Image 1 (tube, helix red, strand yellow):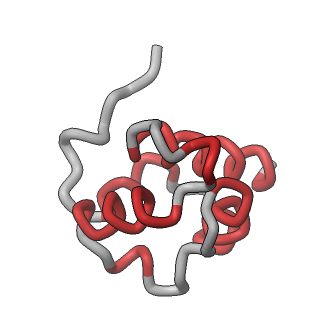
Image 2 (image 1 turned 120 degrees about the vertical axis):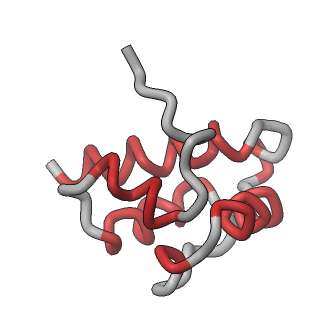
Length: 84
């Protein structure tokens, strides 16, 4: 069962706590598969609102109509698989 932490988190740092073992660079690299621009080095200092805006603005065309949480889940899954 998936833990739905998205609503509970206010910052990106809170979100990243749920996947403690994944380093920031894996998220940045994975973001290039789903976004038109990579996540910047300082994305972990953002609020969740800023992350959502970035995901919505930079979603790859096939993902434009999907919610930002879905786009983030794809990035996170890719970061996790590359981490392993």
